[in-house]
Image (cartoon, rainbow, N blue to C red):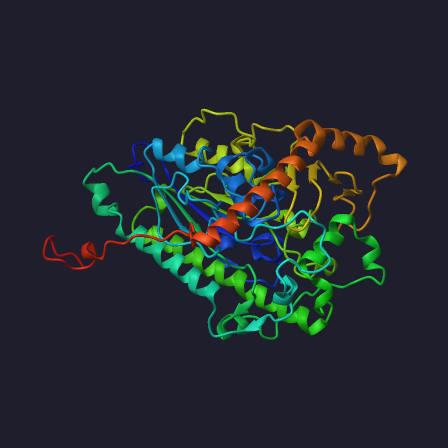
Length: 505
């Protein structure tokens, strides 16, 4: 391994995608979905087989990941809830430690601070940064946004182009441009120049819906067997209160989600989008090699949450089922340290902040909710783990919690019903053990852990107040025509060939 030129600190490339379930990736064992670049990362690195999101919703999950704190602790409850500028993030810590911190793509920050510790962003965000998507606390009888979200799941198919593809292509180009423009190739190393290490976060929109793929991506799965969900006759009888709320919010009853052709198109397009992201990962790694920094760069790949993709007749996220809360998480060191390791202990996104700080040799000054994964990676941490996930609004109408510990997962909806699953015996979560006498001790123990960690009544009050405040501010912002959407700044006078500087091509 080449000597570290960055004052002893490794570069860190974090690739985050949106709404990717690990179950439909070759890297996690699917025999049809083509992910050769992620497969190689798994061969060269560490794969976490029970990684979870701390909130099955974009903005809260990302805020939890960036801060290392649970969403209810920082008040990021939904996709229109602001992350306070007073909350330190990974980027703040790494900036102080001498890293060049750069974000290319999506992070779904809400509020006037669109950097949160990053030195710069190379793109705008694909979604609004203001309170436009603020939801309501009143139980709904029709879809949230007028037309059903589930409609995106029955219109999947071929499109020559889309806004999502445009965003990801810009995200990708800017990331490659950043890597190529850094003066740290082999020549710089040989000259003995010490430079800043980088923390580059490249965050793609896909495989998030709408599921529109190019002809090329569609044709990747021509004549391939496509998995589609199968439904029991009494499917609705298995639904919890949380499930029923989400079904209305997503507008599932307004579309024909159970149509086999619709499901085929959905899954085939999703396969294509997963492979699209995989191609981008491969190009990033190739560029690291081309510019001479792969031997000093740690790569982390993950997603903010999963997607039900028609399983149980459900779509999108917001659920605590495995398809919605489980995420891919792969860590690859340049020297193949611990290559091929598979870790089955439950972990979550909130653990990534402390892990990245450990990787960078940076101490966290504040108490964080997440725990470093380095002990699991090097084999020194053998204690049984537990992870939490939360969902409090934007589709649900009470404070909702999930805990995974060992083989059991317990879902608690405050004031409503509960679910307990033995994932070892029942990986598809059909057999609800909640309320059965032989599981009473296990259920009571998991519930007690939730109530030790969280205060449902206090969170409920905070959510209600937050929504009312944001609704008022949203109204005023519309009147004033103000917004917080990020606009990247490029000084074109310093790009390409200019007479004021040495000519370089």
